[in-house]
Length: 98
Image 1 (tube, rainbow, N blue to C red):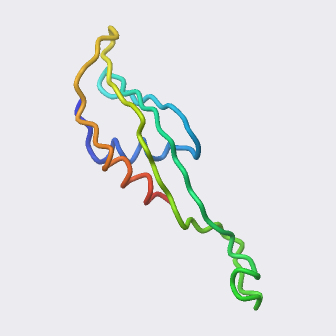
Image 2 (image 1 turned 180 degrees about the vertical axis):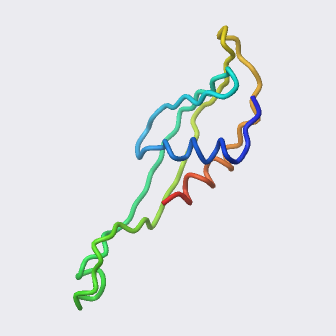
């Protein structure tokens, strides 16, 4: 399985906060991931923005961290295949997504 930036973009859109697993299918092969995604942020309320009625109510992410615990790829018969998965690329796309 050969992944490109579009694949990482699509997968990052399915990442949820917490510890989860995900499967991504491409060209008849399946990539299986186990990951943990942690984020922290704040709501721009009037208190956070200085108390001058400038709060927007928007959630602003201050911190994001993606950790890949395990990954493997399989073909249609369930045999393991090689994959050029990059944890750094996945982290880059996921942590920048807002």
